[in-house]
Length: 384
Ligand code: LLP
Image 1: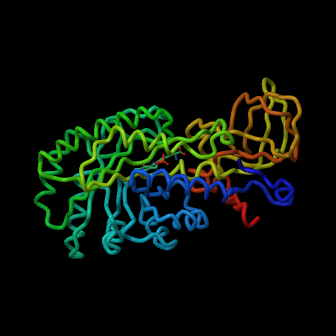
Image 2: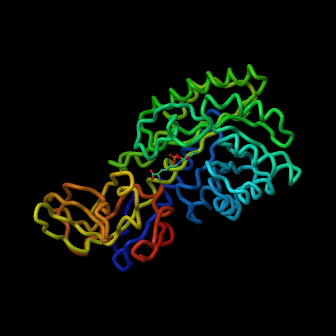
Image 3: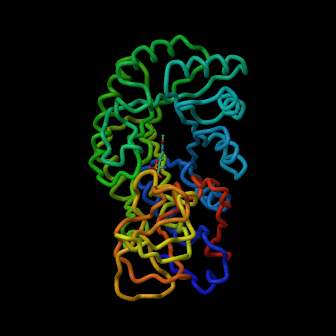
């Protein structure tokens, strides 16, 4: 459970991100131990948090890394991930990004369309090296999550539709500079109903048979990421249940000898170790509601505004008065700049420090400078 050094926070300018490095370490070692039980391969989805210190820690665990831009590949290389652990995904890869991947001979391009495959092939021919590819297949599996972060349905822009697959495969079989490595899936993010993953496994089993009938052996089965975290009660579940998650794949995914199962986890690795620390600026009595106005806003953590995400808000100034109902809002000139509506929280006073919890994933990486706001500072539990 994260303990906040409130005396140290008092003198700091808010808002800032605060990372519990011990919790990160415990999460990483649990993840590694659970994955090792089944010989599963883990790639960290760098998009979730690309802070240098966080990445250096993750890098010590010998995981691969899932990148979705050339900049993420550059960052991964800079912090020490080996090129043969880089998996490059994304629906719109630019030529320079593909060239970067080819020049470093990365582990795999996760290809999203026939048009992209053609470009990768041309560029691979130019550098005279085979590009290793996996096909991202849209399995049309519904993940029960927010519609903005569901990705595996026919109407989503991601992956190659089942109806297109035949065409893509037969074209690939004519290509000299493409090496087929496997198949890739990702059905969405913040998935807490593990049954969705079971459904994914069953769909993959069917597809595997289809590939093998075409004399193509997928060496890599990449099942993507998506394991959710407990935003309501991070203290009860600081480490996601990796054990239950992996068991689903062990039980339902039919693997063949020589096959590797890969996972691309972002949120479940870093969400719970991060917190956005903010001060209460004002408590304002509106005509119909009472507002607690913080100095952190949607520019510092956009998830509530963008996905109606609810992050737990704790008043860590040690003030435990009676509960009062608030809309907790930020200072940005947008009505969506709201961290929560009608929350019953211990009474807040100007100057109280609050922790917006579970902000380690898709928090700091999605900061913007709208309203010309400053990028929040960052502190770590072991160096503060
Ligand atoms: N693999 C692929 C292909 C992905 O698109 C993603 C996330 C991941 C892996 C990692 O998923 P995770 O384990 O973190 O669920 N900004 C949103 C989440 C966007 C997720 C994008 N893709 C949010 O704040 O909820």
